[in-house]
Length: 389
Image (cartoon, rainbow, N blue to C red):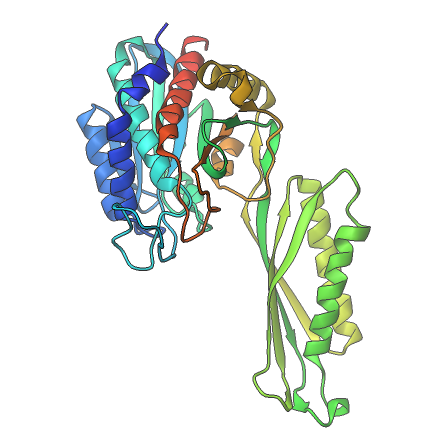
């Protein structure tokens, strides 16, 4: 039996070099032109059938083995964030105000390593591997853009797999959960309108500010009075803007926020109650209220049967002591779109460095020693699921 971790360790220098190159040259969502070019060049050199421009800047590499079998889709996100890096490293971002602060540079390096190992073992491959390098994971619908451009066709995947490094989990640990593991993310906007007026004569105006304050308070009761003990959700008000003078009651107020849920029933209930809160509270204050909800990404849901297999495969790589089950977290990831289309599993790879800062921080960094582990995890999945189909 091939030790994919030993094989991946042989690629360690290349993995680090790829990751640091991507880190030096970050690109924002749907602008990943240089990034896509480097990936496409690498895949072409290995004999993959390569498509570019999928979902604007996405890259797809397809490699078929010596016999028929299942099609495995592996997702790797590519985009950086609008953050000015403050790390003092020789591979610091060369683009002012843009930084890989969520580990996507590591994901792409892992993807390129997977491509290299799978290509070297093509004669042992039964089935097809479809590597999907996705733009715009950071809230811009990159997965859906690729799906709309046909990434789930020719060939149609049987399984989908993903991986994300995490800087605040111990390096070399693997975190897995079944069912919903990452929350669905919705954004909402509330617009209140009424008659403005003089601050000294509030009785002559419609006070959108007071209506907004009460809506903010009432929204929190949805969590405390409508969501049961064994369900969970987050509703955060993140912006409240109205007026620009000390003596003018404004005509308009705008409130925005986010909703995070794991279950569709809970999401639907919150949407319904939020509409009622906005409608009835604005009526009580004599102002007009409008609610808009944008369902950005669904919950990331791991198939239980496939997750059980992935758990055992991961244990072969990192050992039982470094394997953590029942993972669940509030952030969102549009790998969920691929897992909704095809059953599969998304895992978390701990990559905490000596001084770990959180994701989306200007000081974000990872332990590069985990890069071969990521490659080995994917290769174990590829050859197990193609051989046992």
